[in-house]
Amino acid sequence: MRLLVVEDDRRICEDLVAVLTGAGFVVDLAHDGEDAWFKGDTEDYGMVVLDLGLPKLDGISVLKRWRANGRHMPVLVLTARGSWAERVEGIDAGADDYLPKPFQFEELLARVRALIRRSVGHGAATLDIGALTIDTRTMRVLVSNKPARLTPLEYRLVSYLAHHKGRTVPIMELQDHVYGDDFSRDANALEAVVARLRKKLGSEAITTRRGFGYMMGGDAE
Image (cartoon, rainbow, N blue to C red; front, side, top):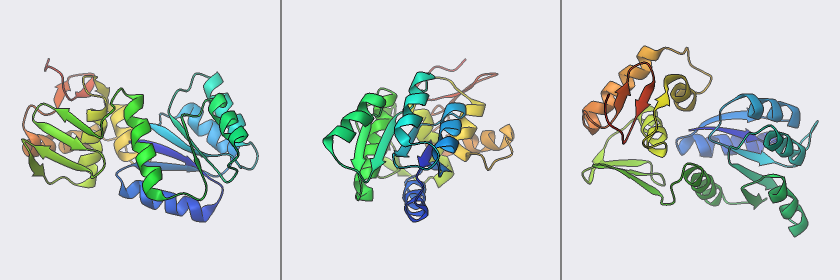
């Protein structure tokens, strides 16, 4: 899953990237409001972690612009200002959740995972698809209750498809959320990862829809 982190404090940014990357996410960064608005308005993100106190354009203005332009990705607002009036302002502007600084990274991760699940219609922390169980808290995948040994790249692919169970995910979208921008857009590389996953999870775990993309929890065509 590809996330956007918007934070002007470089130290906090480094910590957020380390924690979110370690939890299986692909992370893009923006350090000011104008860059954040542009990236969020033109790229496909699973969710955004947005600080309010930004240079060039404040976080509330960024959020209002996204929502006015029809950008519906979940947004978790971070701010050092914790008054109830500011929380109300952020939620009224379109925020989905609010976390005041300082915060525990464990709580941030729990909120990020919950927002992503809810945005695609899942409430529980585990996703079940046939014989597969994907635990989003521990980044573990079970096949008939037996653990499968996946690489971080393989887990990101399975997790994204599982979150979008029953929907055909286009190759370009899947590449965005599995690799991020640091990738040459080679569809053969993605196909190789899918082939490895079928050996580990079962040949029916991931369906190929020729000319469209990949799907979990759907019928082959």
